[in-house]
Image (cartoon, helix red, strand yellow):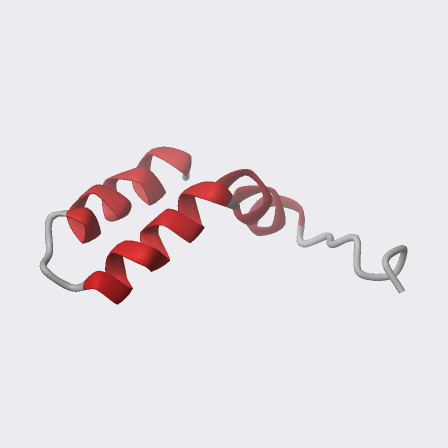
Length: 49
């Protein structure tokens, strides 16, 4: 999943759309958490309250 996410980010970086590039940067920053949630569907929301 990380490889596909990175591939999408590379394509987004190749566009002329600033907001898409910013979104790709955010995805990269949070890649581990996104992939972990997709695999386990667990968050830390309960302990963060």
